[in-house]
Length: 189
Image (cartoon, rainbow, N blue to C red):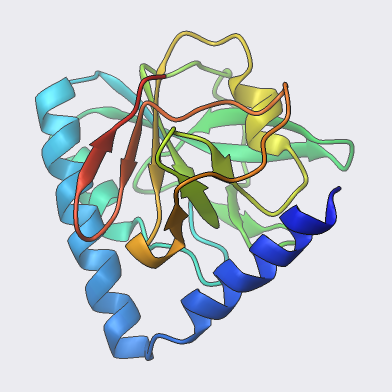
């Protein structure tokens, strides 16, 4: 991993942590409302979405999830199957039994449902750029999962964590949309 990526990750974490809890909640709510508007416009039947980590400050997705359930769309959430970076999506129901993984991320405990590829995937972003590249925490789970899949990728992050250009590698997957509290950015992905 390059020193530039390490430095940017720290800068993005510092930006996130500079918000008060109240301001972060308001920012998350603004982003989520814009995401719900875009989802309604795209009108997918199946949506993949992350559940926020309890160990790091991520844009909340609870409002989006409630909205998806109210619209009776199918919802799928990530589950890490091993430490080598393999991630699958499992169906998430309002009564799903949950567990928390090493990273403080909730996962569906009972994975009786089969894996699915949604039409839309909502992805967490530590930061990103206006070209559609995202920066996560450096493990590559989402890039590996999204590689080669035909779906609409939507990243969520605060506007303070969106810059002109982040370093990217050949395996980095671009987002089709990046949603901040200020805008819904359609990229050229």
